[in-house]
Image 1 (tube, helix red, strand yellow):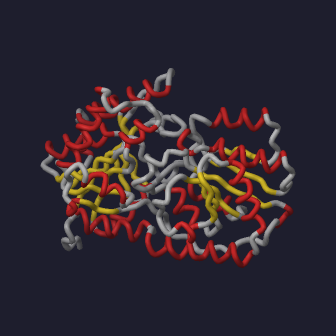
Image 2 (tube, helix red, strand yellow):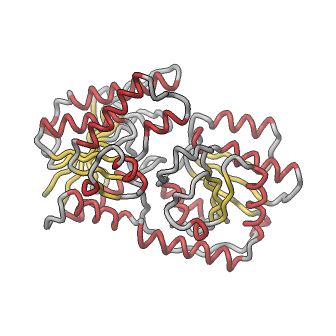
Length: 409
């Protein structure tokens, strides 16, 4: 049996309320005779809950077909960015100096997953130690993100260091996994050869199709948002749209339900309370199984991005888009890019980022669409994601790409 290690400080298991990409890929890799170990930090990324309840420095846990090695990280109070940098360094050092390797099967391949480049660098160092192939997975153009939010400038020493590490990892990888096709263009500009890329987008697990509900069943049209409550999600834009709907009495029957956590959640809750908005409801993050049950009550989903066109010009691959599609409800998008998983006109209703007035009108338009039109959008997206983004299919493609189409039986 082949062995693959995936190193990602922020990996989630199926029990967590977060992106379970690596759990799902690893779980399906077992069908191709590949044993996978996911090495991750013990702090749940979006809640900072400690997974290791004892005093141990690590925990090995098997969940379905996936072996998790949780490395203890010690949380700190204080300012968000310095604390996050400290945790990255802590994880990096603990991984490269981890001594209890007898618990793990020797790897044939080690995947280092960004956006935290120190996780990927740790994977590269271990690949040399264990004479395994190193695979670099780019889930986010992190350097571009830091530049766009104003955290770094191009002449900054930290910027130059991150750029150097990113280029080094890309050039010295056996394969470079990308989640959106524009990333190939980004790295080819840096001199990476085209035959190195392996396109494995985000995905979802199969669930049966569920029909849309009649409009305003129970006298409410329910729009769900699932996921992070951070700056890049631009949830203030959505909330301002619902404020316009309430203030202008455009509808008293359209409600927004938000599920998730993030560093802006408290500010969002305060804004809703201060504005006396009665059509918005916040909920804690829940895992995917619970989300599927909740989503049956939804009439539609909403997706929002911060207005940074330069950041998303290479594309995007958000988990929530594929989850929305498999849950078979229409989607309203507020986005600054046309680089989407499929043709814009087929995905749903669209408006530009940072335009709450127009978004409010699109929400009203969606709520008034006849049931058969909403059903058509939902079914088309559902069939698309079943053809292209189910994790059993993506894992097969990953297995073949990692081992160069060798017979894995």
